[in-house]
Length: 616
Image 1: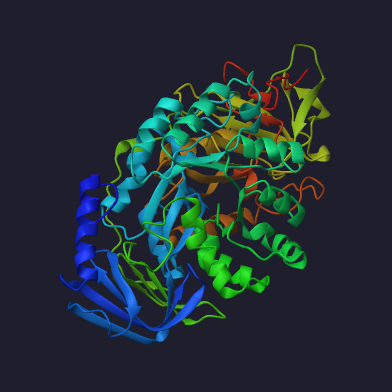
Image 2: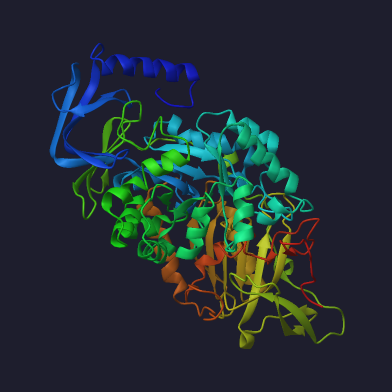
C-alpha cells in the first residue's frame, strides 16, 4: 500500500517507479486532463494540462499531449479547473464527533483531502493508543491523509489528570513515525515560561523532542497580545498561533515570525484590518477549521467554507486557495506529499466548475475520483474499533444524588460560595451567599445560579468536583444536561437544577459510554451517542445530525438560564458551548477540574496553582 506509515524503503520504491513513469519508461495508471490547473507555487493558471497518476501519486504534470508515456486510463475534464486537495494545518477531527473515516466521507466532497490532526482530545482519553487510533482508518483504506500531532496538553495542566500522559520520551517515540508532523498546540503558557510550574519539565521535554525530530511545534497564544509575551512565545519555539482576535494582534505576531492560522470566527475582522493596512505577502497565513461539529459542517461546509469566507473578505481566490494548500504544507514541512499538484505528491485534486463561487464538481484522492458534486462516492473504510476505543467511561458504580451534594457545617443556614460563569477569564472568581437546607448548600434561581460538576471518568474512582455557576444551566426543576466532551481533559461535565437529575444524566452516559444526555423534569428526554472515546461516533454525519436535532428539540422545553454580560457570543438556549467552558489554558484563571491531589475539590487557579474552598 502506497503510504507513509510503511517502511521508508517503500517510499523509495514508490519514487523510483514515479521517476520511470515521468520519463515515459513505465506505464501510468491513469491520466486526468483538465481545462486549467492552478500552480500554487507561482500562483499562475496553466491551460489544458494533464496530470499523470501512478498508484496514489502524481508522476508528471504538463501541457496535454506532451507526456511521452502510456496509461491504462484517460479521463478528460476540459470544462473544469484543477486545484490541489485542501488541507488543514490545525483541526480536531474529534470535534466533528465522527470517527476519521466518516469525517473523511463528509469533508472530502468539500475539498479537504488531508489534515494535521491536533490530537490532544483523544490523547487525553487514551494516550497509549493515540497514534494507533489515528493511523487505523488510513490503514483500512480511507483516502484522507491524517498527519497526527501528539497532544502537548496531555494532561492539559499540571493540576489535572486524564487518560494519558505525554512527556519527552513519548514524543521522541512519536517523532520516529513518518506521519507525525510535530507537536499539537502548546496551550499551557504558564508552564512554558515558569520553571516552578508542575508541568514545566514535561512540556519542555516534548518541545525538545519535537525539535530533535525536526518537527513543528504548534502554538496557542490566546490572550497573549502584548509584545513581551508575544516575543517570549516566539522565542520558546512555538511556531504558530490560531487564537488571534484582531488585525493588530495578528500583525504583531506575524512580525515575530509566527505562522498565522485564521479561523472563521475572527477572519473578517482580521483580514479587513490587514487589507486596509496594505498587507501584500500572505504566505504566512493558513485558513483552519479548528473545531466544527458535523451538524455545522453539513450546514456551512468544511475547508471550502473557509476559502469562500476569505474570498468574501477580499482575499483573491488564488491566494485563498494557497492558504489551504501550499502554505500549510510548507509550514508543516509536508510539501513532498501534499499541498500542490506536482510530481511525487498524492494525486489529490479538487475540480472546480466555477472559481468565484468555489463550486466543487469532483474531488479525486489517492488518484481516484471519490466525490461527485456534494456526494461521496468512495468506499467508507470498515473498522471494528477495539475495547480500548469504545470502553472509555470508567465509572464502576452508578452515581447517586449524594455525589453531587455540597455539604455545609452543622447549624449553618447560609454559606458563602465561590461562583464561576461560562468563559470566566477574570483574575478573581465571583462570590454569592447561598441558602442551606438539610445540611446542603442550595442553588439560587433568583441569583441565576445553578450547580456545575466535573466527573472523573478515567481513574475508576468516580470522583466528582462540584460548585456553583452563574448564568447557565436549567432553571426548570429536576433537569440536567451532561456530556463526555469537556475540553481538554474530556472528563464528564454536568449542569443541573437538582442533584438527582445530575446523577441520572451522568449514569445515562455511563451506560452508553459517552455522548450527551438530557434529563427533563426527572425523565431522560434525549441522548446522543459518542461511543468511540466518548468523543465520536462510528456512523454518517447525517445520522449523527438527526440525533443532535432531536436533542435540540427536546432542549426547547427547558427554561435555560442566561446572562447577557457573561461572555461575548454566549448564546441563549441549551448551553452546548459548556463543552469548551471547561478549558484550562490561557486566558483562563480559576477553573473547575476533576479532583486531584493538587486540587482536592477541583477548584484551582491554573496560572499560579492556588486553590480555594467551594463554600465557607
